[in-house]
Length: 260
Picture 1 (cartoon, rainbow, N blue to C red):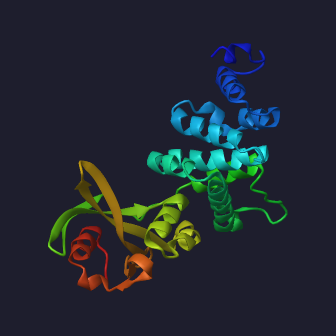
Picture 2: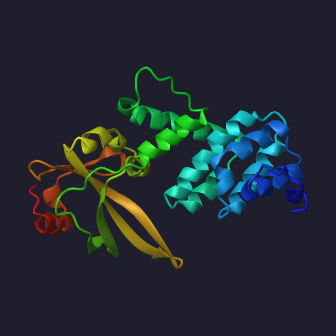
Picture 3: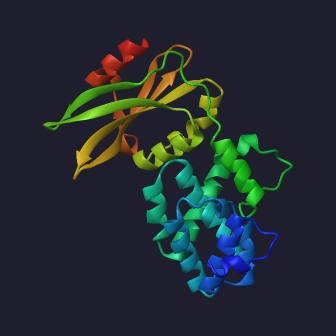
């Protein structure tokens, strides 16, 4: 705080606090400039993560300050999605691994949004404006299937009873999360969802383990928007399931007036 009070007068209060923090940790002027121009400078709600990140990058003598924004924006995306635990896990990775993950994350968003990016525009994930545009594209939802409403029912599997929920995925980032959880290619269905060709649903179970709610993706479901027919049901590693053999899907299909 003593150093923050000595920050240049043209800085905002948030910038001054980060200025003092970086100075106290012994960060370089180049890193300081990157931190002050990053989006994370406005976030004062997750300081445990940001303090850990600053400590890591400053401790690494050969860290390129230009990579700070790529990492901090990746952590911000986890906060936007409500995945605070994931952000904490990421920031505890070795710095090299964290940077590689962050680069893959933004390169994947570039690939998923290629049709929305003008061909004349050069796209570099090291550019903060490019990452912001990708964030905005990622947060734009498409229309949900008409008549969709929340659905929950108890499930029975291998002698265990747990609550199941089927929800529609209406954001690009939700498809990415589902794809990673289920180890299949549903993240490539974003364009079809935007064009109104299909709707994607995720069936998830909720169990209480050691007093905490644990939500697990079980099935990914594709529905034709035109015919309201269930086109395919896939499990982890793209395992095929016939919808007629899953009792909970019968009840869900009747409520939403879907066919199998």
